[in-house]
Image (tube, rainbow, N blue to C red; front, side):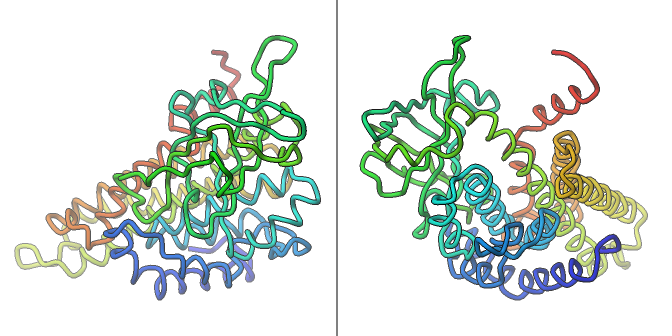
Length: 384
């Protein structure tokens, strides 16, 4: 379903789809069962240039755009959401903040390895008391001579504890503004810095092969030049990063919804019930038709948001709509596909079972469904 793509974009979609089917899918069950991120797959994604898709060639990127990144993430999300989120977070939350807000020195130091897939980075935003309300950040950073001293905790941080994780960018309160509000800044903290502890990985419902950890920072000292972007602009900057990331998450969710549809159609055609293929039953046909409509609508939504972003036009509301629609499509299709599969849909060896567990986070991560509704309501001019 690539009718609205140009030839280059179709080639990218076909290339990543083939990679997903031949390389990613065969390892997905075992990676999920053992809660292991396959770094060889990550390396191969780097060799294909996927981590560099939306970045300029001068930094080692592919010179593409966010639509290209979304195409790749969607193709991966069909077969393995853990691998898809590794790419999404590696680009949107790892490399993109450096590209958007970093100095030329920071870009030169960090981007080449990140865009080559040789290194990963995380974005430390969420805290035990600061999720959707990121302004409630409690992690602090104070200047002591030419160093930042950071104290606090972060949770649910993707790509933060792999063998190739290079750093985590953390948000921290660095002071108070004239109005008394918290001054929030972002600071690069290299992995291995004394006092920076990557805690044991979470035991999650889904995305089991995605690397996710809580982080503890106790008296962590990093050079003052590790400040990423202007001091006090961290809150504004992370909103920009999240708006872009929502497009990528929407692409992932669309891929998940499509993966459920493909699996359900194939199973319904092969499964015999009362002497006939399940696919001949009208109830099954209607279920599959609704699943198809959800995939189509979700793809239109995230393509629209990506094209607005790539054209330099306002896209925050479109990104919120895309994430809302696609996240619900993934969850609804996962539920319906599991029902089509019956008892087999409850077995983790089948992709639809993994999609059923994986898809719920798509309605939570990088802005909950409720946050997206707030953004859309504000676009309608509604105060609150």
